Amino acid sequence: MSGPGVGFEYPPQEVSWTKRDALLFANTIGATADELHFLYELDPKFSVFPTYPIILTFKGTTQDVIDFYSAQKAVPIPGVPAFDPTRVVDGQRLLQSFQPLPASSAGKKFEIRTKVLGVYDKGRPGTVVDTQTDLVDAATATVYTRVISSSFYVGQGNWGGPKGPATVSFPAPKDRAPDVVFEKQTTPETALLYRLNGDYNPLHAHPEPGKKMGFGGVIIHGLYSWNWAAHGLLQHLGGSDPANMKEYQARFASPVRPGDKLVASAWKTGEKKGEWEEVRFEVKVEGGKVCLSNGRALMKCVAPAKGKL
Image (cartoon, rainbow, N blue to C red; front, side):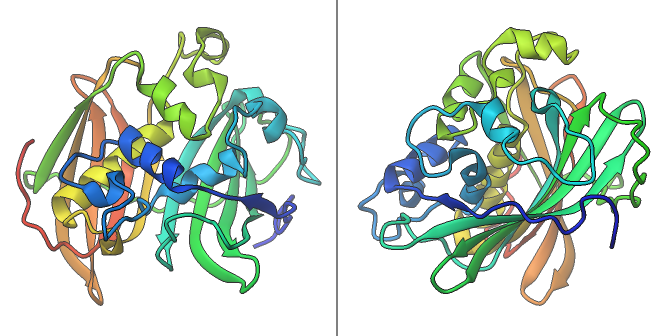
């Protein structure tokens, strides 16, 4: 595929993580005390939760707070307008796992390697930028995970770019009840805790950015809901084994506000690619809109569905 910006490669970004980072991440997305392999560094099966790499593009190598806006506007994409990073939200993310993550990055040099897949002008609503981001062992070129992301730059369209292809949808089944339902009551502190993983977008901490973007104030990271749902699927359908989730994706359909209750519903489809079964899911705000749509995972469903929890 060709088009403005397509194929542009950002400079490689070195990233690192510690066992403490892995513990914090697992705690913030809902890991429970019966999953000590995510929560206790001396557990003989200690593991990094498989969606953890999604945070590394924000975190980099630092253990300190990051200036989110400065980091986002460091490298412009040639051939397209300079977009305002203070008005960007997540559109959709797909994560593919190829290798189990080591407990920490110690002793290795890991890089994030990102290239542009497409830049699409959606008119007045804004612009979509699709990227592919690989987590790579720089010494061996081994790819551990790949993330396909869509970022939506609010109100920054009408620059004459291509409209882009139609997106592939994975709707939740409407003809039967879900195999499993799980819930989470968020609090005013949910986003303030999750951001300590490295995603310091002020939109999720201070009301002013959200007011300027039309959200009315603070909203919770879309990636919080995305990672929370991934944990729920793995816990209730995959036996909490990180090896049992190969792919995971969802579209960010509407904002979640601090204090909303999240309700996730998941359906095992019975459709398999080898040993991997497709699972469809969606997440709603209780009494409100779908906030994660187009949910799909490829999993080894080794645990029976437990019903509503």
